[in-house]
Length: 130
Image (cartoon, rainbow, N blue to C red; front, side, top):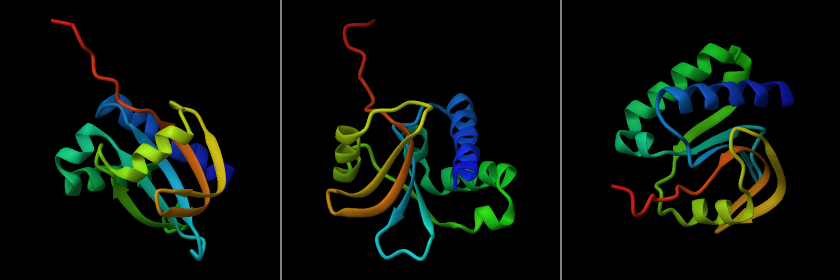
């Protein structure tokens, strides 16, 4: 799985540079999942048009992954910035363009068996700048 995660790290880095920063970019294996991973993301640009964003993410992941690797994904989920699970993930892990691995955890009702968090950073509003 480490090789596949490295490919997702490339995708995250490329999309961050071309589209904008992620607040979350992570692979989650849910409890009782038959080895199918969810790609959870949160980004301002992705929330603006979820369908187009998912299409962009699919296009970029297809460039990096083999067919077999691509089909290990169950779904791509775009979380809104005020999602309770997103806030819970941010409290547990802060990482940017790196890798943090978590096992057997629960994030506000989201039970996960295993997770690879590539980016998990709360967006900071800039204040006082004109």
